Every structure is written in structure tokens, then in C-alpha cells.
Length: 300
View 1 (cartoon, rainbow, N blue to C red):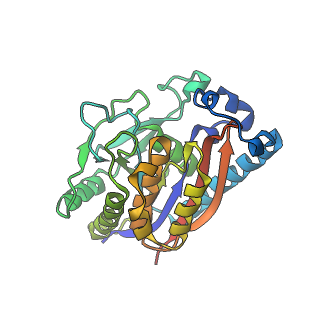
View 2: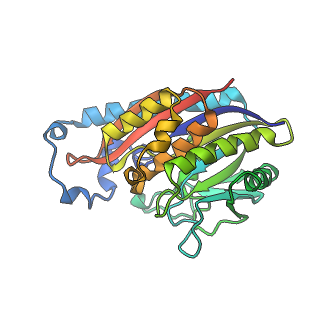
């Protein structure tokens, strides 16, 4: 049977793709509507650079941890923001089962075309189809897709994490899309159930692959909520997925909804997690930005 050898989670917001001197390129319409927070008015460029560098170090740590496990396949759990999943059909869970896919890390903020900066990734379609069938036998009815229709290929939640963790596209992947962003989204409780079912499906899959799960996105944004992040990360460190399941769905809206991808991953791991880094990267003194998190779970 396949082996689930590790679980990881990391943010993917554009502030990780741009250094602090470039953050002014990011749209800040929401920031203009909010009052300044006095404590953030004092945050200098040096402070922002220091926080950003700690995030880069955390990404490096995660990359090394993933490489050390020598996975044959990465199962990526991420959301889709009207990239491949559109209003014509918006299932809560979708598994990509094609043989290959491309992913672009181009940024519109830099006027880069989605057709550029593309990398091709091999999909473990046999595993993907096996997970699909197993989940359908065990209380879930995920959708599936064989092709992408987004100009950039796979959505940004997958492209950016793959760029950071698999710079040489060194193993196969299975993208699992969770509709976190556009209501109605699966509840935290349902994401816990899905994570458990996903891990069980991996372990029942025939073969001897070494498989790791990576949750993509979060933490709170575009309005950073450090209290929410702290409560969630505390539950993660205690392996308290029941507390995660009980969190009100109303907390997980817009960008903050990507925490649901972490919940899927935490439930799949079913172990106490370790937080490598947490940094609230504020783009403006109004509190707008993205809270960045980087975590892993050691599995027995």
C-alpha cells in the first residue's frame, strides 16, 4: 500500500512573490476605505524586509523537509479562484486526473502574461483516479477534471507552491481543489472529514509510493486577523481538529477561507503540527495584507 510520509502547509500570497519594495504594486482598494491603526503606522520598511526574509527562510526550510522525505507524489490541496472552476459548475471538491498540467507563476501586477513563466508537471493520474474512486466509496462525491481551461494552467494556489517546493518539478503531483472562496463552501467540519477520508484513501492505494500532502493558502487576509490565526495555529499544534471543525464558517471568507485547505491537511495528518514561522505581512497601516504561515506534521 502507499505510504503517507508527511504533511505540510504554506501560504502562497503575492507578497511572497514580490519583495517589500514592490508591495506598492498590489491593489489596495480595500485599504483606502479603512482607518489607519496607530501601531502599524510605525512599521518601517526595515521591519517589513525582516519579516519577509523570515518567510523566505521558512520556505527554504519546508523545501528541505519535503526533499528529505523523497516523495514520489505531492498531493496539493488548494483553492481555485475562478481559474479552472467557474460559475457553470462549482463543486466543493475536485480532483485533477489528467496525465500532465502546466502552471504559470506570472503576476498581473508585473504585467506578465499567464502564458509565460510556465512549468509542466507530471500528474500521477493512477493515484488521482484511485483517490477519486475511494472517496466515492467512503462518503464523498468529488468532481474530477482531465484538463485545465485557465490561461495559466493550474491555478495560483498550485503554481506558487510548486515553484517554491518543487523548483525542478522533481516528482509527480495530484491537485485537489477545494472551493473555499465562493460560497457556499464546505464547512470546517466537512473539511476535517474530507482530510481524514483523503489520508485513508492514500493509505489504501495499491503501490508503494511515498506520498506527501501540501495545503496551500492562508492565513488570514486581506484584512489580517492575528487573533484568529493564533487560535487556529494553537489548535494545529495540539492536533485539536475537533476545535477546527467547530470554528464558525463565517470566519472563513475571501482569502481567509484558504485556512480550510490547512484544515484538510491537519485532519489528514492527525498528529501535532509544528509551526516553522508565522508573520503578519501588512501592506498598509490600515491592517490590509496577508498573514503568512508555514507548518509541517511529522508522521509515524
